[in-house]
Length: 323
Image (cartoon, rainbow, N blue to C red):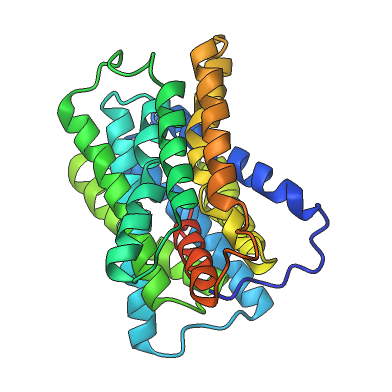
């Protein structure tokens, strides 16, 4: 995907991953707030339509290029079906059914592992033993962070199945976008994907929730935050990092999102992270370091270097926030 020009972006490059993690993690908290006033499909519909409207205005004002053919637009729309509709429809439905925000982040946070496996099977991309070690350490770290929370929610197994659908959506959409949507403009491509997500959410919301909303300042603020900060801001930072040559540092950042989400949720509930959670945060950070540390020159070959960059880009490309 071709990122928009970022020459006027002033923050130092090293600060972008931290800002991205904070913005993406906040989406779980914002979603939990919005679900108090509307059903998951209704809330997500308003999120998508708000973000799509803003991106359309940005595309018109900046004269962003549109897909060169209907086939290319179809590929972009297909990604939107998975990354937008399936991911967030499943995520917020699971949260509404009782899956805590921290556990939701943990389940969806398994995406780097599944993406790496899928990239190996579908895209013929390989990871080094160090990268695999980092991915496994990251998974162990987020599990430690949320260990004391697991099993204490009120959600039924079907709720966790909905959250698993979100994991399948972001993983499948990521792999498909990597393979078929290279060069997609962030502004117009994002608009198309959000419109697809909004149409799907409207169908389910009108059928099962009657589009019912309790209009409160917290709901309006939640939708605005999710649309601007997550649907537009977080994904823009993602592509700025890739465009500035930080693709290899982005792949495993998603392992830091569940711990940060858990800390945010704990702060809002007035609880401090447990020592086990802090240890897990350290393990996850170590895993991210191993998975993103550049290989030594003696170990780097033309094929291994391209594979590392390819897998990193694959793991990094999910739209939101995807959030």
